[in-house]
Length: 232
Image (cartoon, rainbow, N blue to C red):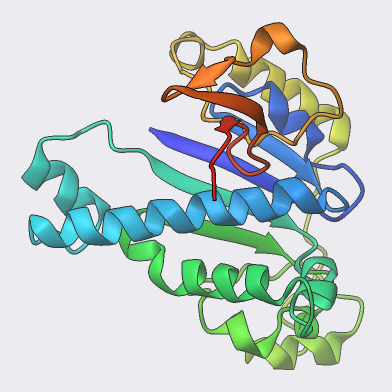
């Protein structure tokens, strides 16, 4: 199985993916709380798998499934639409620096344990140099500036001849996704763990009054689990 999450920094084009049961969340670029939680969630997966894979001498997800017998160990795919918009504020020194550092670590170590990223960029230089080497494959679409192809070591005239059929309208995409979501094998899928934000109001009936013999005074912002009073 493949669990999919998406960060949308490009105007909502990924919203249609939410219909697929294999998609945990499509998070908008201005939702800083859930972006941080997703990065932390993925980082925890990478950390945990690094230990468990090493324990059975597995070098990647496929070998871990074989050696451990856990054939349902999911692969994770994270889509980021508009990597430049994500990188601009997060790679700067400041309140987002910890998140960006964690993101870089996941990019570097995640592939071997089944955590992958696919990102889109609207210009060749949009992907920061600090993470560019983490992407092993690049797909180049038609560019308005022919000199921009040189950035990818391609000739200027690589797409000079008219090429038909390389565009799909949003309507066609949405229709195909709806059809895929209704497929029988998709209906058997369990939706991945959602990345939730802390609600403004939490009904009292939804929170345990006591945890480990201690009165609950609220919920923890990260996990949203009941938070008991901890003296001293």
